[in-house]
Amino acid sequence: MAISVSMTVNGKAVSAPVEERTLLVHYLRDHLGLTGTHVGCDTSQCGACVVHVDGKSVKSCTVLAVQAQGAPVTTIEGLAKDGKLHPMQEAFRENHGLQCGFCTPGMVMSALDLVKNNPSPSESEIRHHLEGNICRCTGYHNIVKSIAAGAKAMGGR
Amino acid sequence: MYSFAYHKPTSVKDAAGAFAKGSEARYLAGGHTLLPSMRLRLSHPSDLVDLAGVAELKGIKVDGGTVTIGAMTPHGEVASNAAVAKAIPALAKLAGGIGDPQVRNRGTIGGSLANSDPAADYPAAVLGLGATIKTNKREIKADDYFKGLFETALEDGELITSVSFPVPEKAGYAKFANPASRYAIVGVFVAKTKGGVRVAVTGAGPCAFRQAAMEKALSGGFTADAVANVKHAASGLNSDLHASAEYRAHLVTVMAKRAVAAAS
Ligand SMILES: Cc1cc2nc3c(=O)[nH]c(=O)nc-3n(C[C@H](O)[C@H](O)[C@H](O)COP(=O)(O)OP(=O)(O)OC[C@H]3O[C@@H](n4cnc5c(N)ncnc54)[C@H](O)[C@@H]3O)c2cc1C
Ligand code: FES
Ligand code: FES
Image (tube, rainbow over all chains, first blue to last red; front, side, top):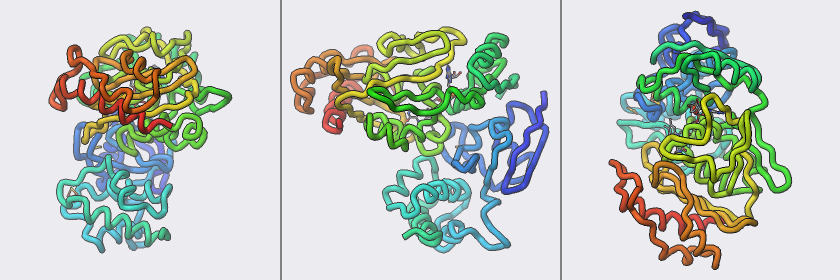
């Protein structure tokens, strides 16, 4: 059976008839064409799919689209403004915080959730916060550096 | 994932009603155990009864000597709640060590206890503090709640509404975490309470259990040294690719020592 699911994605009201079992990540990718959010695993562990729902970071592969009914959702596509990268995205670019880029949208969305509650995170706080994000390429060092630089650019110390 | 019918009631009564009407209904809390198992088609409910719209299941209350946590409260809220951190610091710390930040933003205490994964963290605190589990039908003492592998005292359709933790004099929790998921390979919760010392172990057996010899040893003096020589037998413990039963038995003593040392 199809059910109409509406939410506000990156500031725009959207609505699509989907099956109850549709995951939020598939709603975003297949129904809205927002393919920046990735699927990297089957076990809810990799964090490639992290988006914000109601201002909190969640793994969109482990949330049903209907569970986000009526909620504000932010994806990686919602960060850049007027053709200009968000400071956290810019920091990843500047600090070589990505290689293949597969994990990057999830890393950036997770990082922004950290910085919201902790504007000047220490290196160990950043590493702890990334427990749910896996990267196959970088060895994390430059990701941690990027997040520290991004936090600073956003106004932290 | 197989298809199912979706319901979003706004009261405990309507949730239980919707559950009763489904042939193989399940409650949906944070979904961080249920949805992964449905995705793998290991679980096939006919109906999902989403508890997210039931306001009475949310929230944290600290009064007198009790911390009461609504079933739908996510781990992250327990971890960052200042009143919990003040009343039972070990409980806030335990909640802050579950999974990762995204798991803590969704997963709930009610879901964790209803599921009773042998490696879950909350069962250690519930048993270690002698908490009371409140449902839509009754109150269940922690000592009567955990029955076996993924088996609890809950009846079919019985809904956890909240959990009440008596504030102890002192408590501590230490876990040896699986490096990928952070589930407990072994976790030990120790508490010095008005009624005596309680020691609860998770991760090691089919479900959380109390360790009587350690409780006795700590009653004579609540120090890490008191448990340092109390051994736990390997027989009956879990053995899997993460750790053998013998290794888990060894970790019970090590984690108990660390938990006592960390207690506050
Ligand atoms: C990557 C990952 C890492 C994790 N790491 C840890 C960890 O380190 N430690 C740990 O303890 N857990 C861990 N978890 C599990 C996590 O804490 C789950 O959120 C929790 O076990 C289940 O809670 P939930 O709210 O998600 O429940 P759901 O998945 O929604 O439900 C689980 C079960 O409980 C039932 N249920 C839910 N709420 C109620 C209720 N109020 N009354 C009756 N029945 C109910 C459901 O019907 C279902 O059968 C991890 C999960 C993931 C995905
Ligand atoms: S795709 Fe969501 S955690 Fe891996
Ligand atoms: S940059 Fe390739 S997975 Fe992280």
